[in-house]
Length: 374
Image 1: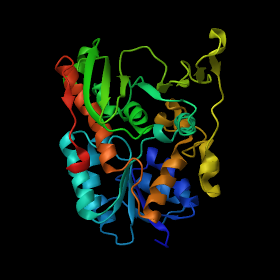
Image 2: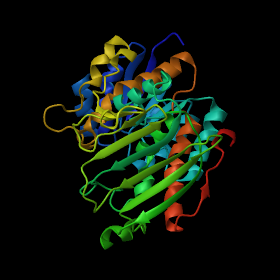
Image 3: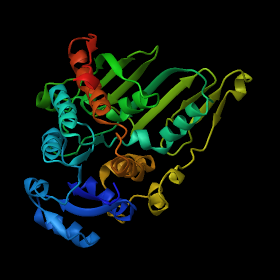
Image 4: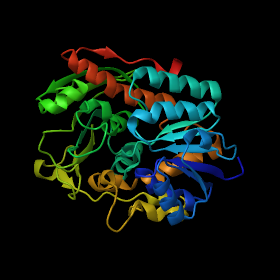
């Protein structure tokens, strides 16, 4: 494709973070925005100088000038809006998770094949600087043979709106599943998960999910590797943490325990007191077009007083936002699958959905569908 990609952003809470990134991307045209609340729509449209505005998602999809939609709507709307967009001939980037059921994940993969349109789940952690650092170590051979992967996502969701209260922890698992699967581009084959502890009764009854913590083991297909991930959302004392750790035969990378500290590299065969050392995680802005490199270091949403809570708690998502936008646009320009593509996104999302099912069954092994071949 030689022309710029006309992007429409749907949902202008967290979604507004991406507007100036697309505006400054050399291959994108930040064409349209969509928000049900007209006052919010106009406020953001005026702030960023975007003339094409929709309060109706269906009207947006009927606009022939829209090439791609970036969906940032509430989780329960992701699958329906994704499928509508794909069937309307639009490429789709969607914030996590892909869907709330395995059936919807399968349907999205099928429709991408039927329409030939691209789908990308915008998983922040696999473009965070810490993950890119571990990826660079792996690709340079410094880790040696990878032996084990581990990740967590712990967050206090009290006071969050709508669909969050009482949500089963593993129903929002892509921030820890994505990095353990994504580093070596592995496919989860089956999962076993245990629930632990109990949240307050008023929260339990919303989703019939009692667990304070859910912890899962993932076995990867055609690999000797497995991974361990754990999640908590309510009634667990823990500072926000999205951690990712990889253990290799030569070196291992461990996430810091406290926000603001440096990660740790362990190097094999050194004297015991020299094995562990704290390291600075470099920024990876150099991987981006120069026009958007500065977005790895700061947020853009309502910078002064009202930064989006997911951005504040998430420590800026590791500078991932410009990398996500760039991967999506680059994939469309180059006519290739983005990472993660539809089947990978379905695999990562379904690990969490089926992990919760496993926890309700006392840790039963549950197979994942073969999303590549649905």
